[in-house]
Length: 382
Length: 210
Image (cartoon, rainbow over all chains, first blue to last red; front, top):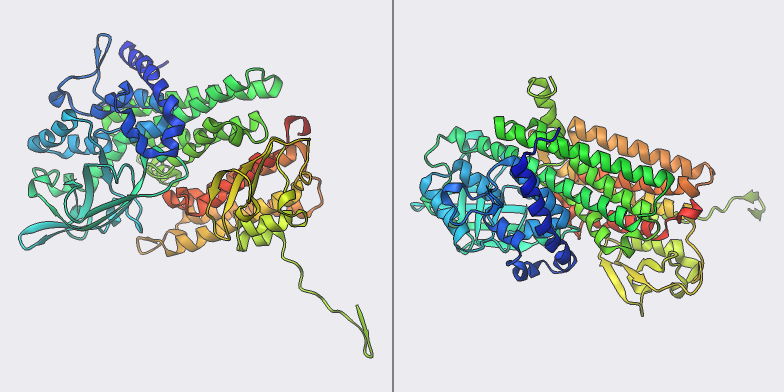
């Protein structure tokens, strides 16, 4: 039984319609990620530009029929992002908007910080980025080394980040840093990327090129004290705990992105190999069944995160969805025969994109470790 | 054997490096040269749909569809509609191509071990995490099995050929996952695996041959 009600079903249908525009632009954006600027008027891109802005800060909240939606709910995000990614994950992640930083600000920001950040999101399409991962330490928040220090009465940020989506085009960055050793020394700040000392450059990736992942260097960037997120909270609730909460909330969304790629590859092979018979037809049908099963798990995981904040089920969903995206795209190539990738550029793009979701939000190993913790604690699978 | 006053003496020439070893140690382009060497640049085989993956210097006058700057030299994808089936020097030897791709996967394993041994994790390195050790061992065991298969003389064609290509692809991807996002950059090990996957795509057997 699907957990989607009439409202979410309506959103899904609308998102699917908007995603057709993403598909049409997918290959050109893959060739030149800068072209996202030419697509800001697409309804789906406009939707993403405020997707995640809490209702209190929405100026003109998006509606579908009689329903309002804002992207602050995990299940809603999962439904919409699957459809957008089935159109094109590159455009989905290239779009301006609060994205991951929005979840962090909504969770950690005080009233003024939320007004400051979300006000900018609703005023005009604005790119943001979420800078946690470091070159030598990955996304392990407990091991990060970027430092936020007091120097001559000012806060200065020094360090390096890597694999940050939209880093070079973002106007605002949420950056994780350390004020002192230990888990309570981790904090997050909001930066205006035009500040002196911030430098970001794109990294050339094999897929999801629209997102233009980048490397960031922070050379003594001055940070306004009122841009330190969670300044009204205890250190225990604004550091690693906060980053884990954000990751828990976003994990079903990443699973949904992977699911969208799997669905797109499945639809592609059904369209381009409509005459499949025998084993091939069975294989395509089984893939469809697996996509439906993983979708049910993703929705269940998103509902669980919304209800309890627990991300254990979401770890299972993320791991399964990423594996499915890889398997479905490879199976589609196999079914279409020799040179399928080079003869079908859109399928080739899906193959390359499918590998990329693996690295977002922790690879399969990290998800398995998290799931194990959930099993041991009796929070999942009991 | 050479006859001397002391009798027959073996004069063993150093064995030529195999395409598998070259792919592992030197890179994809040198391995491709070895694989296609006897034919010359102009006679490099294309897949049946006309695509080919070649060392860049072998693609002199052709339109390059895609380029990978890899260790050992760049390789490119080109396309020329074939005038006749299996023209331009005939098909690539299926087993040799598997050996090349297996060598690439072995090189990925080397890259993983080197990278993860340098990557700190707590008081140790990522390489020494139980989960990582297990996955590297699994990848190695799989590679050893594939190597044994290719050495066994069992004909690898039809559905088995397709399956082994798929196994090498999945083996490579399992290794790349251990590298995290580094395995997804266009100038990293992931690009080598990507080019290897395209080789399988170009020269994979058609359904009627499976």
